[in-house]
Length: 466
Image 1 (cartoon, rainbow, N blue to C red):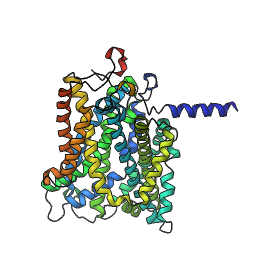
Image 2 (tube, rainbow, N blue to C red):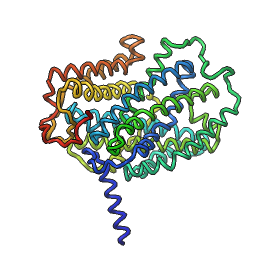
Image 3 (cartoon, helix red, strand yellow):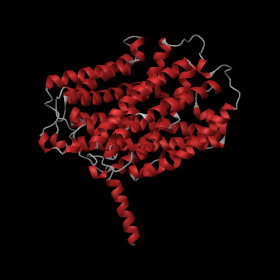
Image 4 (cartoon, helix red, strand yellow):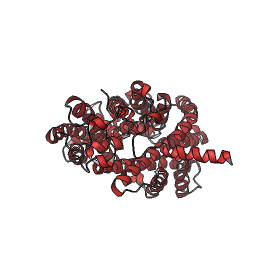
């Protein structure tokens, strides 16, 4: 009986340690940089990056895909490192970090859209898995596969950050074995393209120019998400590991996302003449390919559901005072993801990635500009982050106006109404515009709407880095 009570107490403690509504206390920031970096590799090892690399290489040429991958590593790595540092220093994820700069209602809107992005990606990744399994076992109905593999990530997320750490630790070596096996089998298979893979160029396409811009535009669809995502885990980092940990959590996974996985996707696509990893991995490894796909997609989707549950918790607590707990939102996010899969979400992949690429990169740019330029250089507003709703204004124009204006104009540009160049660089254009507007509105408002509290009442660990 005592053992059962102890287990229940431990489970309750693990659930409470998710800190969906407030900063992680200093004494609870006890995870090493290696453990947290390992968790973020659940995102970095997603087969989705194979697909992006393969599609870009086959449509726009390998060299353009490679250059765009280098660009993505640098930009997402810098943004991710800064955001991870701010999160580790304050104990807050991006939802909470945004409350002062956007106001608690303004930040709620970002939380809701952020959650919708993770749910959509959960559906995208889930469909890659379903397609791979259905290709090998066509007798099993697609709808049944969606329900089974859409549901499995829910219990795997039940106990939060500690459970994620354990799952990613034991599964990473298995992933490594599968990945090396896939590379060896593909290497020993006769390549469809006779030349070096990096020299592959479709007919009528040239290196640089429009083709390169289109590749960069595709990278923008995911770059903002990978940069922002680090904050959900970096907030648990040990204080002594902040500097090294911020780089490892914020930059290194980007190298693996866009460089290793994306680069392998380019190589696989050119060598095998196929852009869908759900097809070519199964063709290379058979049942082993199905298991490989199953492993990678579960690794990515447990992190997708985790981040979605945090964001939904923030949104409904701020707007509706509804606080049923993160486990409730795990189930909600999982069910919505399955509904999107059943509704054919992959048919709208391009549209979804266009909007979220613009929005997420804009949001990341505002957070970084607010921290480094507004707070640190211009000394406007408080030098700390406040998450308590009673101490905050509903809206802060410093974050809200740039987000709305830049996202709207960026989306218009992405749809092609501002010319070819801005269509391909819409997210970057929106991020630069948002940064400029953030500084302008901070100067205009003189930091009035950040917080209703006084700095002398703030503890030392709540300040941003000096």
